[in-house]
Amino acid sequence: MADDNTPSTLESGTRAQILRVARDLIQTRSYLGFSFQDIADRVGIRKASLYHHFPSKEALALEVLHEAQRAFEAWSAELRGTPQEQLAAYVQMYRKALRAGVAMCPGGSFAPGWDCIDDALRQAVRELRGVQIVWLSGVLGALRPAGVGGSLADAAASVFAVCQGALTTARMTGNVADFEASLSALKGLYTH
Image (tube, rainbow, N blue to C red; front, side):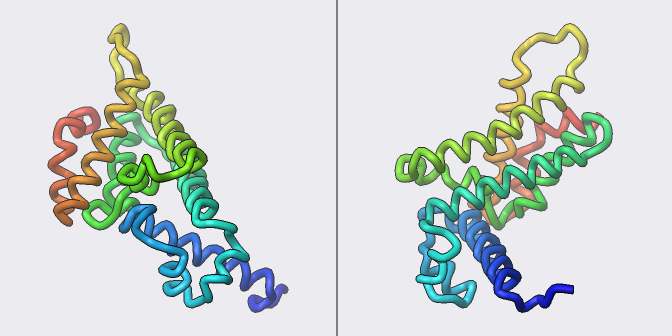
């Protein structure tokens, strides 16, 4: 049995802690609202030690976004139930896992500084959005009555935008009830 204090275990534990802290700061302060020093202070390491794990703030943010995408892909792959239940679970994922009223989506939190971030970060945000649009398109396609036209991708983009907007509204007020109110029209799709 491996000793939990081996260098590789400690290193992976520190890396995981850095990622958790970075995700929290990205979701609560936005990408532009914190520094490497803020992360080092919260993790309890020297700022120079962060560079051992991530060569730059951009590299750290990319890993946070990739981790968020992998988490969504794993969550959606394991999700069972009717299309209505799956859509309701998606909304609840935004409400609970993304902490409505307290935080923002990891991808959505990059929007305020969109013109200040590099292309790799923009692409990672687009990819995170893209996997959700593809998944939502499948769920909405299963909800749609036969013969009803229109783009599933457009409908999925609308659901995604409503959830992002609801998070933003709740974050501005600090009130989860505002998240719920923002979704009142969408709820009709999954409460029948």
